[in-house]
Length: 335
Image 1 (cartoon, rainbow, N blue to C red):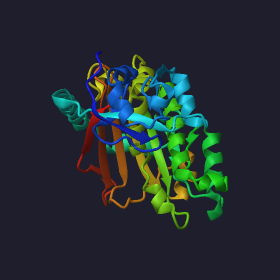
Image 2 (image 1 turned 180 degrees about the vertical axis):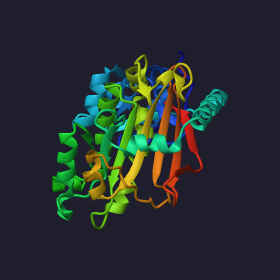
Image 3 (image 1 turned 45 degrees about the horizontal axis):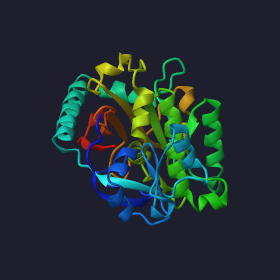
Image 4 (image 1 turned 90 degrees about the vertical axis):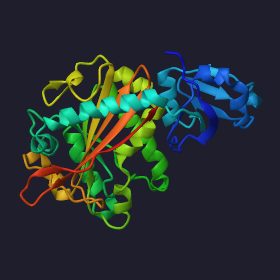
């Protein structure tokens, strides 16, 4: 596919979220717009691109291709690029059409799903049929009663991935936001490379001062930024895999032909509820500050056009113990 035109180039810090309507540039786009790009870069800048890195004028304004492994390694070592080069790309009418097609397919699929069955698939652990790939985020630290270690050990014993906001090293804990974002990237790369398309994000309630702030950091929202950095690789990992969700093939779900999707359930629960999870008891959700008991996040990727659509569907548990849908929230963009 020919690269879409991108304008209004910007240089941002590596740890910054890529703004809406912007995306990382490709090496081809940097070379085609080298003068305009280097004007927004300092002379000694080294910026990450989707397929490599580019240098400022002091280094000769060069583009250097990097393999996927090299780009991912740059995220977790001290050698990572400190900045990213991005360009404005609103997607135009084609993105609007893709968004509409995706939402039409999603609503058609949702109309045939049993809300209670869908959510219980996430909240009821059954060793023989449990579908989601569980992760735990925003777990209170050990300085509030050892919850961090207990939940970490619990997850590891069940071969579930554990991605805490807190860090046992106090020096790292002071830099938690930057390190958490890197953990999300590392976690996401591994999970998607394994072909997992369905996950449950569990946030442990309680834990003393600061926990509510940490819980408000919805990991699912970090994924939008991560997709905008590594979307082509994510699509490659998932495309062609015979994934199933609720016993149905991926192609029969909300992803249009030629696309792939990832789904993440999100729930806040008491520590005791999560600890008893694998005994066969359901997770007991705590209502979020937004008034929801459960959220289902679906991200659909179009590999050819490099569009993404992110769908958030909140659910509320009524007095009768039944789940009901709330308003659907969506966003879309390019990567």
